[in-house]
Length: 121
Length: 110
Image (cartoon, rainbow over all chains, first blue to last red; front, top):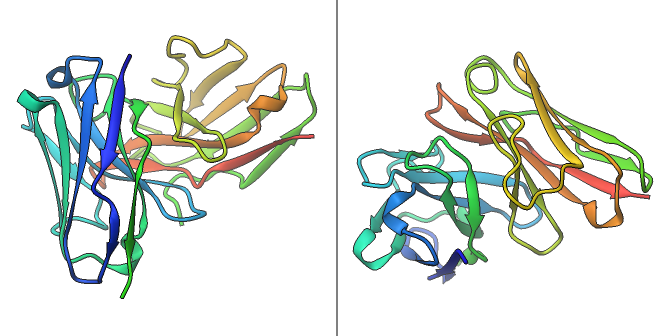
């Protein structure tokens, strides 16, 4: 059974940094693209970033480009999101997602439970 | 303001058929496939339809998707109370080089 466990969220001041992690199990992690998707309180879904199976292809939403960095460690079945220069509008529940395919243009088949990031002074 | 446009709400009675629309442009729906996600209250989203009309294993055939030009739609037949959820369409956008979602449609089963 595919399992994605998101962690690393918390309360952080504007301008500070936070690193999210996603621990994957139940599938061959290195065979699939992965994503981060966020959902602000009471709002809809917003794709944040995606990374291909071998990290060769990485994309970001314009809203986080230059501030967030996605990475993966296939040896340890883990996905990361380094978030710098955080803003109040980054406050959201962040979900890790597994794509159906090796590249990021497939579909997010499995989702983590989400980790809440709150940016506030 | 979402790149893909969905009606904010939809409703139907048990057993009815409901359709949810998703409108985009040539850079997203017009040139790429559409996925649909269901989000039950308080839970993570679930993939319902991918590649415009394909259902992942385990999704009932009451759910169907279609695409025409720069628009797509999700149809739910034989509506059940457990279908009450938020539904989101998504497509890759070639101009933005990323995934875009619709604003979501809240489905109420009366």
